[in-house]
Image 1 (tube, rainbow, N blue to C red):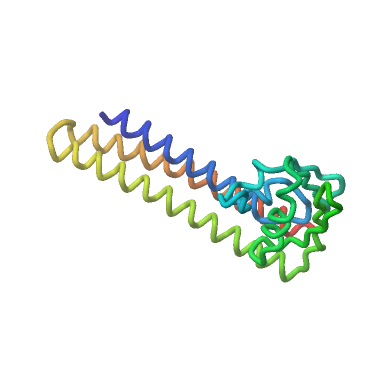
Image 2 (tube, one colour):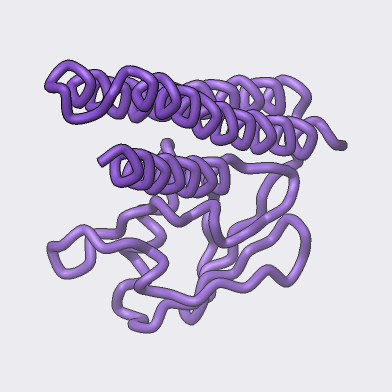
Length: 185
């Protein structure tokens, strides 16, 4: 029972780390990369569709990204989605592909992105602590119901704490890397 609880918690924590990595990929640094637009949804024939499913991406220069739609009729909707203030892109189209040139990040904007990265990191840590709490409650319930002994429960909690610590350190490392990436001029 304990091993199963710890294994399930470890799996949930890994998924949380993966989700955090995806979130961090959407934060813009000085370079263009396709992950910046992974969460952009396009109204494609009345259904919200991820941009990644509608086009190919290329990065010909450090601050330029080109988006080539599979279906040229979706070009206008893709431009509209990219022009959304929340996305913050300034797309230009030549009829076959969309070119997005990213402006140089100002110091102020970099600091805003660092704050955003730290907030996303804290969200990930909170999610990890929630997974830990649920697993601890399950272990405590097993001890209370007499299914396992108190020594086993204490040992399982130590294992759970080590697991949580490892994943929190992983999130901290991701935040640190992103911060260094953002502040690198």
